[in-house]
Image (cartoon, rainbow, N blue to C red):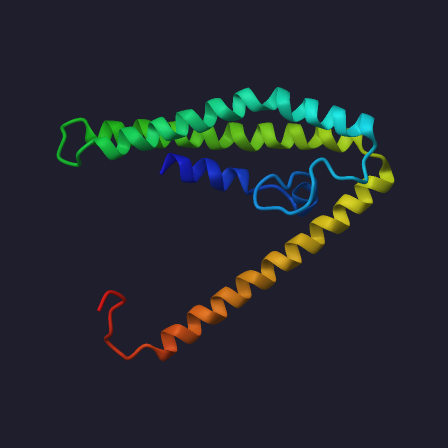
Length: 156
């Protein structure tokens, strides 16, 4: 639960940021080849300096999720644990958004105006592809639900 909140906060980046920080599931190189060697070194340094706090947040989110999983709903402290984990997840998400915005601004500062335009264009293209994939997925799910016989369950 806490981990999901932190992940959702991490997804709050704009399309231009996505073009800059494609770190998961991307085929493109990072930092992009259209940056100079000095820019790539600077950007890598920015990400390396941000890594410890990001790792600490991930570890805390995992610990929160584990605490919640390991607490039985019948325990007398269950509601207190839920409240504590919920509060912590909110704080983690808030910190993740703030730190990502700060990192984005720092990386953006390394780029030239022309590179910023290119990053914006690439981000918009990536967003368009993402929306197309989501639409195809929703269409497939809709077709499957129409093809399923009425009253049939997924596990039958």
